[in-house]
Length: 242
Image (cartoon, rainbow, N blue to C red):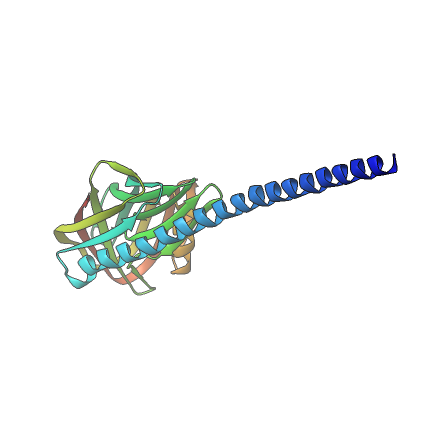
């Protein structure tokens, strides 16, 4: 009888130890897999940010350094890339004898989207937009001071399609027009921006010395007075995906 009880005890002990091992392995796999997923998602968005930094530099080659075209490769990795919600830009200026306004310019955007996060290139800037707000990753090539403003308006005409999956997309940008629309001193300069990345634009424009208010959640109205020189140059750039 003593031998039988000892055998039962060893069997029960083995079952308990084996169950504990299975529980530990299962917990590690569950928690570890979730952590790996988080790391993968974060790295995927970080890679997109780096690619959009290159995209911004390439488009600046077109607007600031006279290049006729540029190509940028962006790896999707289970994400989507395409034309997104536009940024609406309205630029106006007043001086003693007259005034100027661009009207509401609808500027196309290039948007990478994965897991509820958007990386956007629009109006010369790269922003990251999430449910909690937005941040500016690459500032537009504006010159804003208390004496002069140089404002390149980057008007993208983006191919109307979206690409999803895990592939590398070639984003090709080609300049089709360059036009100086305003070049003079003004009494008041006003810039209105309607964008999903309002937080990012507000922080940037106020840091550059403009006075900004928010007429609505997605709209900014910013101004600066008594400028010796305002230069507004429009670049029209066609964007295709390959």
